[in-house]
Length: 85
Image (tube, rainbow, N blue to C red; front, side, top):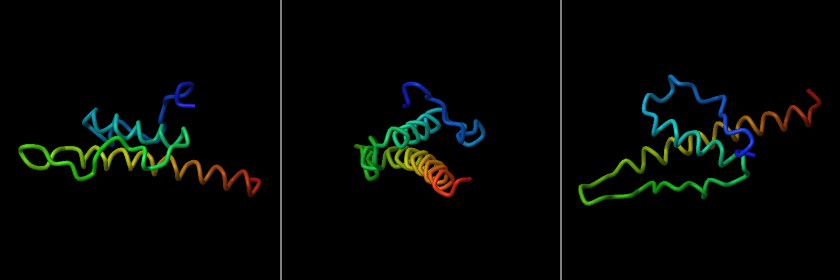
């Protein structure tokens, strides 16, 4: 589905001024839209580099935020269909 409609309407330009974080959010949302679980996140939550903590956790967090936001939309729309709204 992400191939046909790669837009994520709940991602606001003001949410993430860093385009890389916005990209991680978008990838998480599209993964959920494609039916992938949270385990599909490509970012390591606890990754350490040679200099200590890396930005991996920040990317992990943004990816998860996108996944969870899309999940809420999907669950809400499923409930509306089920309830006949």
